[in-house]
Length: 99
Image 1 (cartoon, rainbow, N blue to C red):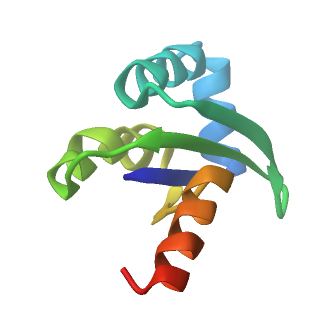
Image 2 (tube, rainbow, N blue to C red):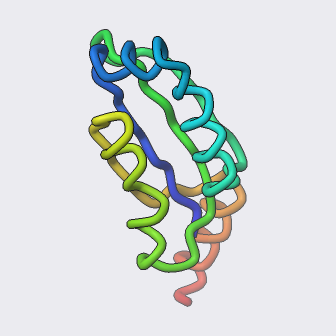
């Protein structure tokens, strides 16, 4: 299932990993683990915030995929299912056909 992971990194924790040189390693590990179809980086309420859109096969993947954001970045993390335009079209067609 396609998911969006949002990780909001507090400024102090983000500054620490930036200064000690581990931020790029943490992000490289996240890209390797998630293999996202897209990733975006922005600010939210003054915090570094990233969005990763990726496919998650089963909920048991949550600990290995998410723990680094908590442990290494002290991030506030959210995870939710999302649809792309094709998924929405399929869902609407299924709904209209009664399947």
